[in-house]
Image (cartoon, rainbow, N blue to C red; front, side, top):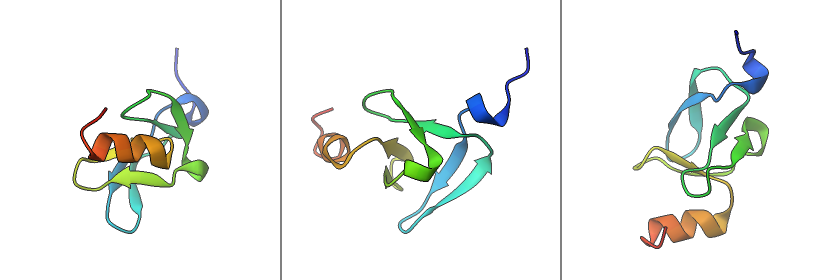
Length: 67
């Protein structure tokens, strides 16, 4: 079965001030919680780790090595 862009995870390259879409999709997966993050709601990521986070709390936990 083919997946539409609406139910596919996007592949992104995260930079210090934004991200670039490598492969289109509707969301990315939080590196800590595993939850789906719609691209229009994505606010937290690490360019060094190339990971997305669902909230500032989860990003802080990951960056402090607690997740």
